[in-house]
Length: 76
Image 1 (tube, one colour):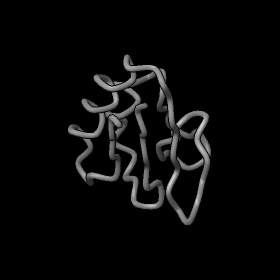
Image 2 (cartoon, one colour):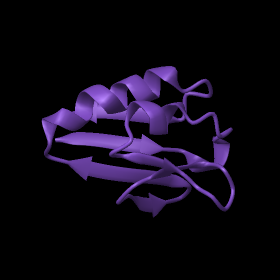
Image 3 (cartoon, helix red, strand yellow):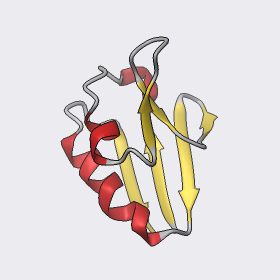
Image 4 (cartoon, one colour):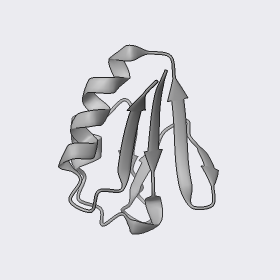
């Protein structure tokens, strides 16, 4: 299970996440911040869980590239 978490409030809109993992991230046209697709929000954290192991590599690249380190990826 791959768990991706985004702390959207702190997003600066750099677009790296959408470039590295376009199947999981998009940039909002409304405010220019990252959107974690198909995620559930709880207390400012957006979380998406997938059994697809192919999510791990692109999302890890997105998390590593994020200059404000607001993306976490766990493989459990």
